[in-house]
Structure formats: C-alpha cells, structure tokens
Length: 89
Image (cartoon, rainbow, N blue to C red; front, side, top):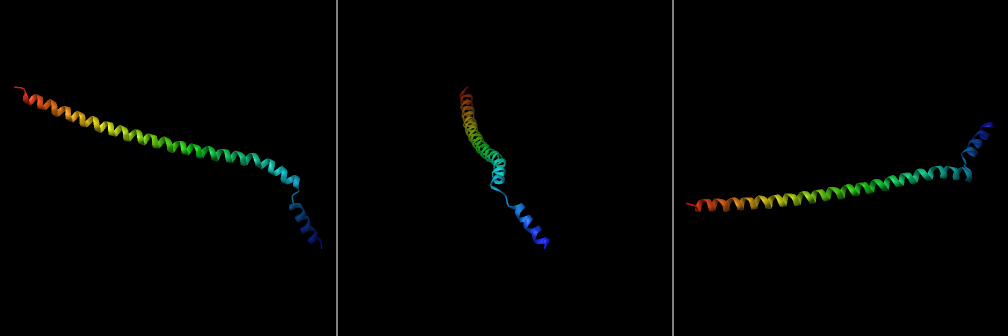
C-alpha cells in the first residue's frame, strides 16, 4: 500500500503552485525578451545587408554603363583623329 502513497507524493510534487509559476515566469521573461530583441535585430541586419548589396549592384551597373559610354566616346574620338590625319597632306 505504500506504492500508491509514493505515487501520490510524486503527483503532489509535480504540481506547481501559482507562486512557483510566477517565479519561473519572472526568470523566463527576460530571456524571452532578449531572444526577441536578438531576433529582431538580426532581421534588421539582414534587411540592411540586402539593401547594401542592392545598392552596390546598382552602383556596379551604373559604373559599367559609364565605362561603356566612355569607351564608345574614345572610339569615336580615335576615328575622328584618324580622319583628320588621313586628310592632312
């Protein structure tokens, strides 16, 4: 008959009082808040990283366009100079 008492004792020990819940919650709350803050911060960092990459891609594309335009202008200038040189006696 002692086994049922032992089982009952275990059940009583596993039941937490409201004070125990409050104590546990007060310990867990700051941890959950820190986790939330870190998660939000990381999400902002990832968004910032993505925006930075997009800006860099746009800058690269603009630089490539400018380079292409300059190469075309240099080619035109070169042809103009060649035309002038051909016309000179």
